[in-house]
Image (cartoon, rainbow, N blue to C red; front, side):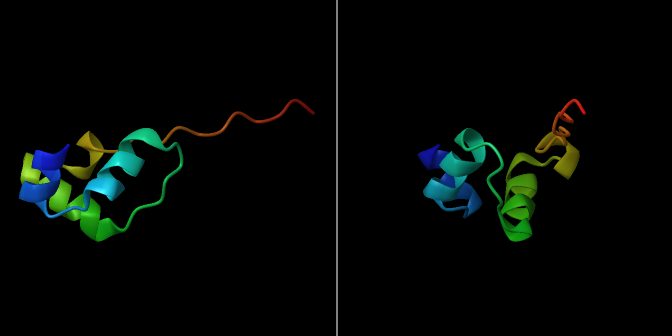
Length: 56
């Protein structure tokens, strides 16, 4: 993770939280830096998973 942080410009702590903390909110500039580093689209980095609706 340190190498990705150094080469992408995204803080290592932010990377760790993105990877390990469900629901962590990051700034779009971090996602942009990661897309540039990995040469990928945003859809390759994130996935929307809707919360389960509680039974009524």
